[in-house]
Amino acid sequence: MTRIAVEGQAKRTHPAERGTVNLHVAFSGTLRNDVVEQVARTHTILVDQAKAHVESGAAEKWDSASVHSYVYDDRVKSSGSGGKQRIRRFRASARLSVTFSDFEVLSTWLADIMDVEGVEIDWLSWTLTDETRKALQAEARVEAAEETVVRAQSYADALGLGPVSPVAIYEAGLRGGNDGGNTPMYAMRAGAMAAPGGGAQVELQPRDIDVEITVSADYETGPVVEA
Image (cartoon, rainbow, N blue to C red; front, top):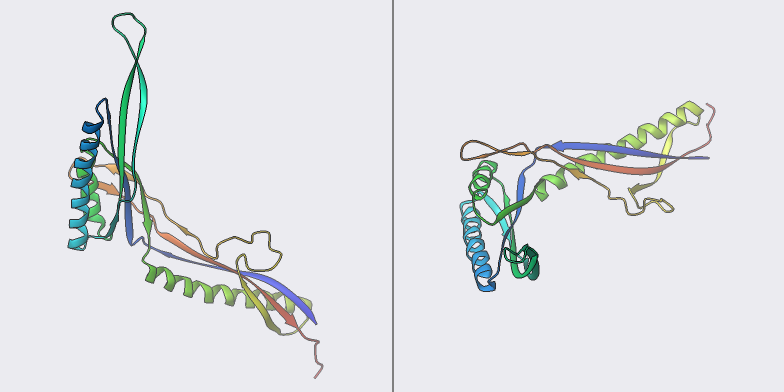
């Protein structure tokens, strides 16, 4: 009896279904109350817009759980002595993320907020819905498992060992002694390019998202039985 260990891989590609914009509002100045008021006012406007997009169905959700403030010293050139003078400044910031299902509305909103003082867009991320991701994973698992059968049988045929029988199958990282013990069983990758347009939108080019599955399997072959 011979044991054959093989690996199977499969990938499904799907257009991005959700786009999440992550941004923050930040102001600094010499008066703490003014800085806080500027951040609060601008952040409130953006949150109200995010809520409106969710209510209209263009966005799926919004989140704002991060607020920061700190004090720092800024050294500026003194006009009198020619040296540098230390000035105490205050800075406050608040973050916001909004997940859109309507990319056209997302493009328009990005164009609008780019002109708002104090608003900085950090990054855009692209994802699939949970339903789509799970469906693609299920399809890829089947294909990856089938590939292990084909590979194992190919080795067995080459060695004249006869038909193979499955012994065990492992998702990536679950096989004992695997150096990559924490490797995820699937990978999702997406990128985006955003460029300001001349009108009321930002041109977005979300790439397709890959869902990959890798499995390994053990097969055994029995002795060849003569007819």
